[in-house]
Amino acid sequence: MGSDGEASAEFDAAYPSLVTAAAQAVQRFFRYDASQVEDAVAETMARTYERWERVRRHDNPVGWVVVCAKNVCLEQLRANARQTRASDNRDGVDVMIDLTEHTAVSVTISETLGRLSKRQRDVAILRYLMDFDEATTAATMGTTVSKVRTAAHEARGRLRVLLRDVYLAADEAAV
Image (cartoon, rainbow, N blue to C red; front, side, top):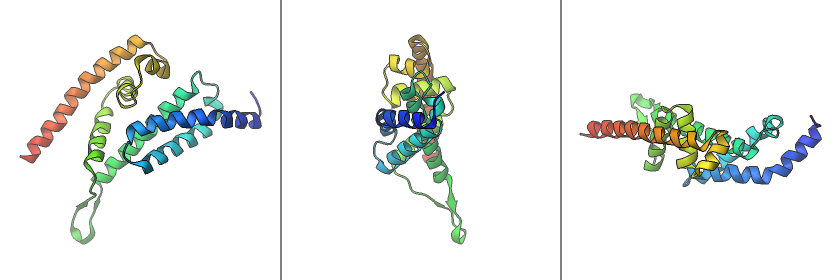
């Protein structure tokens, strides 16, 4: 198994490559918000450290960190979505939190991704949001390139339908 000192030394040695992978993954989600990037990378690395005993024995620790970073980003996007729905009832008036268009689009995409199956969602995020190629996506997920291609095809079709419905509903509400 190894001592705590050994595990700590392994984590210290792996940290530069792990934090680089986490930062690259997170930047693809939050391109325009440095504070969200910093928060997500810090949370990803904290989770990695907490679970280091398991992560260090993983076949692909960098892949584990990338998937963890993706999950942290999705959690942050969901939190942003909850904030948009939050209202302040001071003086009996509902006041919605104002968000930039970029954040609103990110929230819509995040909510729509949540309606895909887990495999489709993971493939869509790794392939299209994080710009991984098919082989890297397959290695990260521990599956075959063929299964990645199939899941990507299914995810694109499902997203096309779901996003069309979202934007049609928004257009009808605006009229």
